[in-house]
Image 1 (cartoon, helix red, strand yellow):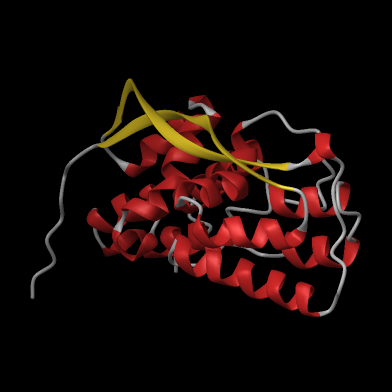
Image 2: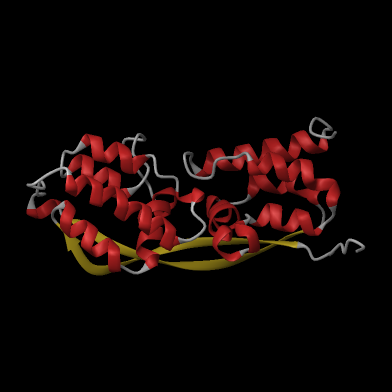
Length: 225
């Protein structure tokens, strides 16, 4: 079948995550597990990904809110480390990510008869997120333009197109690869380079730099076969 090449421009969007209190709180691991089992998927999404969009001064060893709380409030370093290495980008759906969380917590509960309790003022408070999308009226008409546009776009744009897009697009692709593949096969080496960028264990500013490096390398000829 002849390849169909679309010519739609890449419309740059910006976004913010609004944090909404759910009223659900946990003081020990058993309560945390029980709430995770039934909480809105948007809450699990927020506690894994939301930290990228808010100012953080946490220990970079722990990349999600569950691991940070288990370490700081329950003082369970072993469990915190198990939770910290969960990569949400490795799961196709939030439900699969939820199942992994539950399995780890169930295993931890099985190994202890008396789960530690957090102080009353250090309860885990479940937040859910709602994404708000802005239109900065920036459009990219060819891939080479992204080498000039990427340094200027906001970190919210990086989050929207490189992270949140994986929930919206077929095959869980970020918007860059999703769009490049609509432009023809010549961008497959660039798509491969983008696929190697880790979306989670990094900051948004580092992600922007890694994306820029991939585009610059491609258009300078370094990635071409």
